[in-house]
Picture 1 (cartoon, one colour):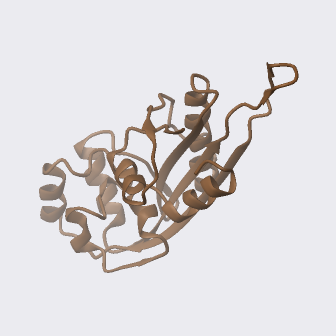
Picture 2 (spheres, helix red, strand yellow):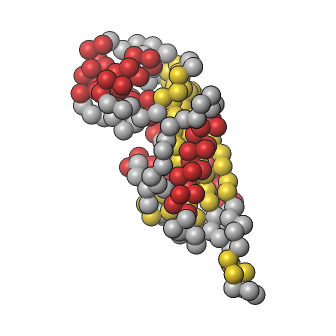
Length: 198
């Protein structure tokens, strides 16, 4: 069985749309970046920590962790803390190109040796990431305030949802659209297939 270590409704919808069966068990970890941590390394580490945290209680299942980070200039943007933080993030993104990085980690079940009936701790971890470049038009302060007031940006990395109202401000992307929504489905499908999870 595949366990998704995420409460994100976007990730769940992407997996369902791809015909991938799964059960949800969100991970509860500290998602703060480490000092001087590179964005890709951060996204992959957080995905790994989420998957490992859930796999502790689901040792016989495949567990998928994911984490999405938005990067603009030298700034790494996760989910906004509040409305003011969402406004700050959107002002940073306004009129600029940025990258969206999603780290994914698949933890395979613990192998059971039939001859000794003992578990072995040789759990396989597969970690990868995808990066998509996103261009956003210039936004007025009124547009930003009105958008934040809808509540849509609050639980999204970078404070916007490409599949929602913010789609009107994104004329161009280069890379995997699903990655910007929260999960690079083709990458994940390949990982699952390669490891016999589907």
